[in-house]
Amino acid sequence: MNNSIRKPWLLVLTIGLGTLLNPLNSSMISVALTRMQHEFGLTFADATWLISVFYLASAVGQPVMGRLSDMFGPKKVFLTGLLLVAVACGFAPFSTNFAFLLSCRALQAIGSSALFPSGMSIVRTSITEGQAKALSTLSIFSTTSAAFGPSIGGFIIDSWDWPAIFIVNFPFILLSIVLAITILPSIGQGKFNLERIDVGGILLFIISIVALILFLLSLEKQIHWSALFVFFIFSFIFYMYEKNRKEPFIDVVALKTNLNVSLVYIQFICINLVYYCYFYGFPTFLQQVHHYSEKQTGLIMLALAGFGVIVAPLAGRLIERHGSKPSLILGAGFLFIGTGLLLSLNETSPILWLLIIMAVLGMSNGFNNISMQTALYEQVKPEETGTASGLFQTSRYIGSILSSCLLGIVFNRHLDVEHLHIVAIVCIIFCIIVVGLSLRYPRIKQMKKSAKTT
Image (cartoon, rainbow, N blue to C red; front, side, top):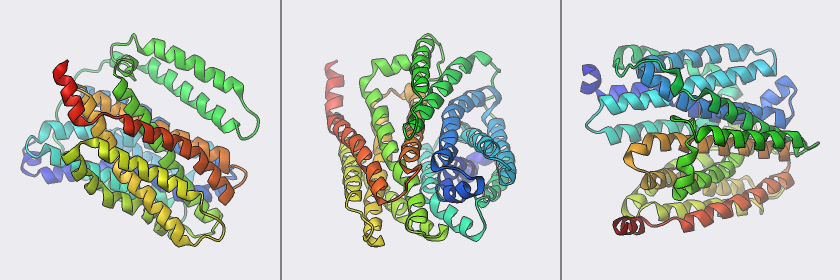
């Protein structure tokens, strides 16, 4: 404990090395999908399950691991998460079939999902001075690893093969384990209480999302109306079940009573649906249509990632001066413009034009990530921050899952410029929703004024 207080930077580094594993592994696979398709004889729709299962397991894993962290202590949960990731990454390269690889991806997501909530708990209890700086540093670990995941994945896959995206985790895992054992304090251990884990809500949520994915992917060929029926039935049961829970997996009552917060979540789902269509779609497009190598694809993807990282500090300064609304509008505008520019892309377009479009979309991500998070915190009470943050991440995962479904539908049989245009046209609809919600969002001064009158 004393060591962590004397050297807070070492504590932050230890947690940061762990927390970057989830976003890194969620993004590296974008460049590996083509190799995995060939290795396991998959359609593109089949391959998108590698994305969906990771985000679905993360959506379930993070809140559950947060509760387990309170019960068993964050250090134990942090180390357990690292060991689970190590097991998943150790077995994945030896996958003999697609089902086993999917299982490894799910285990990898569950393990890496333990690291963020347990790490945040340690920071909040161990660092009192400069806590905001520590949290922002951890945010940089996450956002940077996610942004540069395709580039890292492209380089290592080009040198080795798709198993490299799992093997590359081990230096981070081993260093984080050694540091965690010696640096992280043993704090906050409570009693195990199974009632605090909403097992019923989790199962209903998983069934609903899987049914929705199956229905959406069936739109490309024979539509499975039964899957849509299951989705609606279990979603209704989920709502009725959750509204009576003391500690629900998703607080549906709070979503119903706070419209502004609910709209923030809806907007964030739409943003991630659009952005991750490009984040996962561009690498496959570049490899299978333009026949770029994984290394070249990784370099090109730097345009999408790099501009997002560059713009993020500018967005932060804009938010500090004027609140989140101007940044929300800018992020929505760049997303809409970048998506619209994609429709101008054709077979003869130079790679420079695609890089410009990717840069515009990257800037949208730089504005959207920080402004959406700030907008959420402007709308919730301080004591509701933890729950709101969990739902915020769930919104990200749902948007990402829906993006993989859209790509699976459109790219399953044909992957060319025309079908990329179809993706862009669908995304424009969601961009319009994002722009509308950004314009609707109240200015921070207006919210303070209304708060005084009430």
